[in-house]
Image (tube, rainbow, N blue to C red; front, side):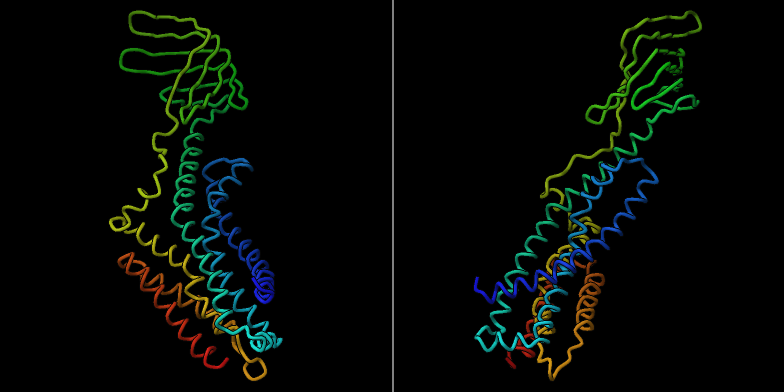
Length: 338
């Protein structure tokens, strides 16, 4: 990479970095608000809050990176034009074609990473987040409080005299069926969680089976009462399996088109950024922010309007349309003049 490329890259990174962290912070706040809504249903620790945020990170990146790249590229080139540095670059033989080739290669790499993010990371993170939330919802149903009546563990009504974290003292359990009543009492008990299965381990207790005719008593040192935490916790599908039904599953097909088009946004709009950013500042005061906003608005509006058609046709059509229009704009506005 030559000195000119190094210079362009350093200028781009400085603007890209500041814009990215700003958009990343705003987007993160929005998703943290969504996480806060989840905490009204389940109780999570600070560590688990961070874990939930990591599950959302691929979705945060898919919205922040493409827009940041487009805005940063247009602003950097406009800044260089305003300071007449682009004229100097052109005089030294670094033509707009070379600038376009350089930034197209960067946008291609970024879009490739974002496509991998959509195809691989987002499905995995979505499944992990859903399983985590389902797990915590189910786990919350087994939070037994001390000295409260009417609490249940599986088919058992439970009363405890005192409770700690996964530990209970002086526990009494009651269950009823058609033929008998069952009562269990124990001095202490512990909640055991193994691979999605909750077990209540009772120590030093007595079990009673009461029928109309007799009462059976059993003394025990250790008793385990098992129950599934949540039989709806899903296995994480393979990536291929996850995307196989995009033509049958309308919602998944629309999501596929939506996120893939966002992933391809940097590549589709690089020539637009070059067209808006490279100007002769003395004679032309480009309304760069207007054009940036217009491109973003039109691109996302096209996605929202056409995402419900055939997924592949919508994907190819919108990307191809914007890429061709942006190249024509670059050719007419830049290549014919410089």
